[in-house]
Length: 179
View 1 (cartoon, rainbow, N blue to C red):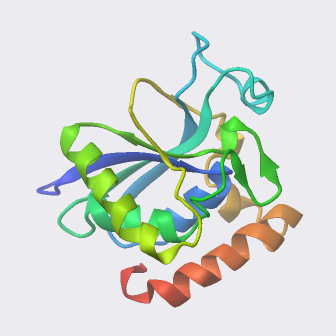
View 2: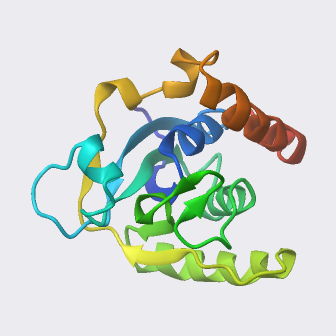
């Protein structure tokens, strides 16, 4: 990996397919893995169990990034502006605690940065931001068919109607950050 300053961020903003697609577009992002975190049920959860809403897990992505190219703060700003952080347990038509807006911090510095970013971007929203900020406990990688979902399924309806417009918004707002 050379002299890269690799760090991780774990965030959830609704369906992980959307969040993954956004961050795979950015310079400095080494890897994005879709998965689950924040649940109360022990053991390795399955997608089916997550979708029941009974495990307490959120759909999240774990991002490995080069902090010399893109900072944790920049990642969070992009995250907060590419999903709706004001809707509790809901993103578009996706409803349930598994779709909550959440930042799982890896250390106290990430926690402080997350709280500061939320405070700063809150002035751009009419409603209160409901994004959860919690310590990362365990991250579970989602099933293989969820990885790189958008890139592998661009013609699928959800991708065409939900993810493609989200990527257009990203490209118009953050063109200088794109690969």
